[in-house]
Length: 231
Image 1 (cartoon, one colour):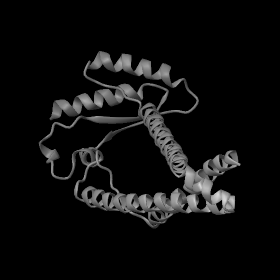
Image 2: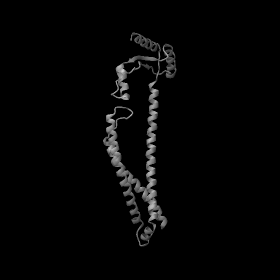
Image 3: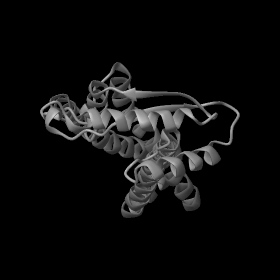
Image 4: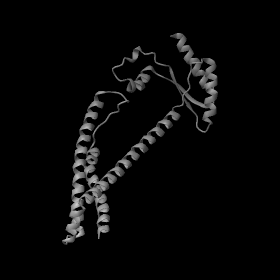
């Protein structure tokens, strides 16, 4: 133990010799446990683990950080090859880039889902119109207005989409509640805490409405163009 404390002081003194280093302090074992516990969970006994010795060095502003870090690594490696120098801000930058990538992927998936919904509704509406072509033509010949025919297809298409959206929303609510209950029992960042907030409830309620509006526009646009071509 005395030899370890001596080595720590030697490393700390070596860091303090650099003009670029503003301050150096040792992170206590209790603080290291606090940092590690979210990743390991509360059920793992950290006292039995060989936790590393961590020294936190703060660099001054307005310096060439990479150049100074290279000098620090070179000097510390001469003291002990097992010493590792890590720059947390670089890790944070990678984390932010990863988070931005996940957001972009989520947005892309949402756009693809909406585009798929529009294409599916338009295809179903056009197929339905072709299947009932003779009926539509008969109604048209006996004096039915195009607006009336269009309205019937729009009501049917919106109703089908609305039923599917409501069913899908209910299933997603059940899954969200189950995941929220599961995440509250497992204390690990691999399964982050999930909670249903008022904004989530509002979004769930808006899903069927938005789906119905998308279906309305898609059905009306596609069917109207086909009816106009029949005239």
